[in-house]
Length: 303
Image (tube, rainbow, N blue to C red):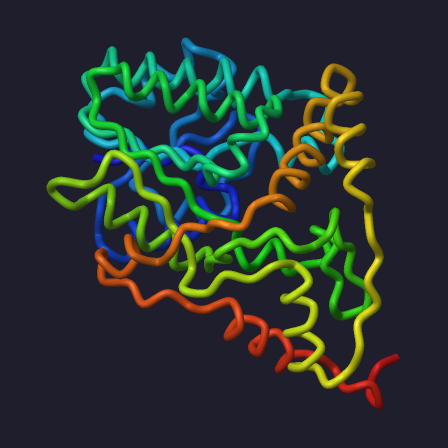
């Protein structure tokens, strides 16, 4: 039996579908106030619990062989949720889950972390991820720490200020920082395989087969769309000041700005070696750009 934590999220939903398609029994941990949505028909069992409440996790981990956790607080915090924090969920909550899983004699724990270059930012969110990684390494469980690079779907969307449909994209810093943008479906497939193969690696860095900077992504979109895109720039000093000045006032926003600053500095990226070793032919980000462009409404038909 597998315990899936974070199954109502974007990546978690993809994980749930793959587990169900393979006929793998899994229990989904869902917060008491959250609608399980598609999980209700995909999961073998829904168990109610909250990472912030240690006692609620004990029933969830009983009889579990493998935990897969993709849960985090950052997206919810950035949408304005004030009833949770990075400290409560990503640091203390993950500690609660690791402790409960070890006490229940879980044998394998698959934890979705962040790219090494982002973790080096030492933002509140990065520090919480690193603390959980350290806990897992010190535990009696076989840890499988998954570090995907930037996801193609959210990073090429208006929610991340890459609003190619409206013709305006925000560039953080110089825009020269590179990432091996990877598809979420490819990451989900890799995680399920890592959770079920006999001898998985303890650390898996997942990148797509093609690295690009944000500037290069904009240029690729312009070529695919056949029209220019306006660039709006946020200077690096703004990212630097915000990441330090907001650390105690708004740790979530400070983390986003700090990670953006470190992303703008990075040049080395993971490749798709682990995905290939798992038998996955990952989608290049340029192919995803062309897919997006194919869905665009021509200027003559736009409202």
